[in-house]
Length: 238
Image (cartoon, rainbow, N blue to C red; front, side, top):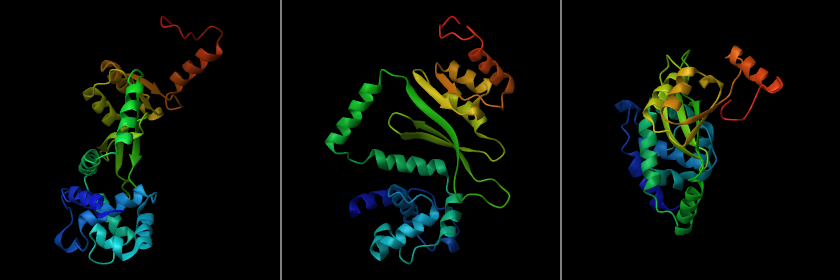
């Protein structure tokens, strides 16, 4: 790993406000966040694997990332990430990725793939995800609503979910603000709600939703439509 990409990453991470008090700043914020990012890119997912990744690379990597002393333990990372605004972190990381210079053949391949897929519906997967290491006491862990583009496997956005609600109201508000024409929104059974589905339709989008036992009457109707002779037709007028 060269020092140029890491330096660029550190510069971007330095834009994130440090939520820690003066006594809690033993390690640079940018160094800790860069360690998590680099370890994740290397396949070390989670905070304990991040600590292990740093130990495997030794002092030279610690200095390259900006550490001035032995890197912290898992709990220190957990305490920091619980205070970081996920939307700010996501924005900064996306800005870093977008300013990277891709090799010409890689850029051409991405453009070609996008052109080939442009005629098809753009599939987005929406799902609620918990952030590991953010659970405090009896409170649930921090949760995000994540939008992922299926074709290119990239995260389009993530939005924090307040602790007093779940992902469905947040998704409903988001669907009302987005342009969904030509897009297929794929969601699980938690989103099988009339208000959310109607919001997608109102924005000229389509949805594919799982039906389970949380909507018992709808589930029975769907099952009956498939088992009754001539009860289901793919024709549009049906």
